[in-house]
Length: 315
Length: 271
Image: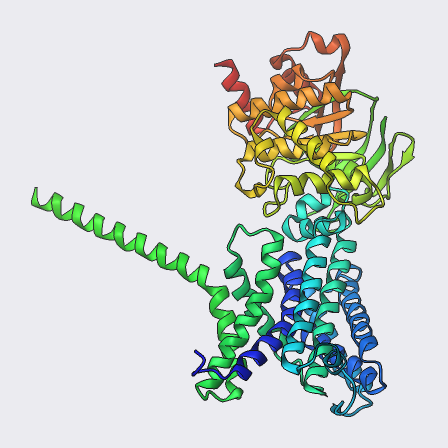
């Protein structure tokens, strides 16, 4: 293993896996819990990066994290407003917001498609002084941040509001007969989800010391791939706590898969195709398996019928 | 007290599928009154319930509950004071959440209104356990089990518990035992009787079982064509038999009773 991977590659995979783990958690909230495919993820990720980059350049790397999250909340609110108040299909609402965000993101970046934050203080350079050696300190900072986010999420999903959000995605019929306002729960859920996506974008910006307008392209598929890997780890009966941690684990595993691919000299251009295939296969598997089972039963009954006919002919 | 005054509801108005589901219907249910509702297919029974529960707003008329006009109150605001059970046991619970979580959703929202961040306390858990024990289905030891793994009867009993844990001002039961097997249905019905009488609940119950319609509660209402055609209580109800009821129906509506399920269940009982 150590011969196959340099330590550096493993560390990078872990770091990036933790950062993208936030997007996977965001998708966990919107896709797994609320049962809504939120396609504004790509744009929201770039939004977080752009807002964060501008504030980091201005010399406020910590404030940048919170500003990015606030921007994410706003973006999530617009998506939720379109679907809960104006009756836009949830998928279409995401696409509309995603398209709008392209212009917004350009505007945030001062109508330039690329912004560099080289030489500025980031959360990673700030903590370096505190914890010493850079890759280890980065991992520590990110792991601590992810742990806090996970614990807060798990706590939140045990509160009245959190439970109501889970019920909204799980049983729409029950919600309408309980005193839960689905408009409120969907809005809160999407705001929360998008704030995590934007936070992730902000961290990636500070990590790479750059922000690009196309940074978020395909992010929703990558995050879904991580989410699906994570749900496999969690199993079917896992509680919320287990599922949340497994989603982050899924994101890290996904990065390790990418690291292996890199080591095998697969060109980076293939990654999005590979992610898409992972997601398609993972989502299609139960259906294909069912189909295969049905075919088996069919052929078996055909065979039995043929045998019976033969038996009758013999007699 | 529930007061439904001259409500009407038409679906798909102005199209070939126009359906006058409720026409100028009025109904008053006193506090603690338990009324059963029977009627043929498409008589407007469920529509009446949905109008009271707020699934849609009525075209005309008003709905008042304990003095408060709720005609245009959104469904989720009404449901803190109105419990609503459906025929489909899958509708009332969230399958991927545990028994405890389902109860918490129902309980915390109504018992501690306004506090969005309250959590299940040890005391709440004790209360849940105690209430579950009363169901006598062994659910008190399975609080961490996802509800999706329970049987239909267990889910319906749980739904009933969720709807009545914080005493509602009105309980609407829409054939809530019809999809259960006879033994379980009987059990859920016994439970219903107990919960209603213990809580002195005001309750409306739709049923297709004519015998039940006469024996349960204190009042029998018969609907047809979006109207109430017969409303029996007191002595007039006491002397009623199922054939009497069918005869009355034919006389009032000018046609034979055509709820196939009712007729089947009537035949079963006669055998």
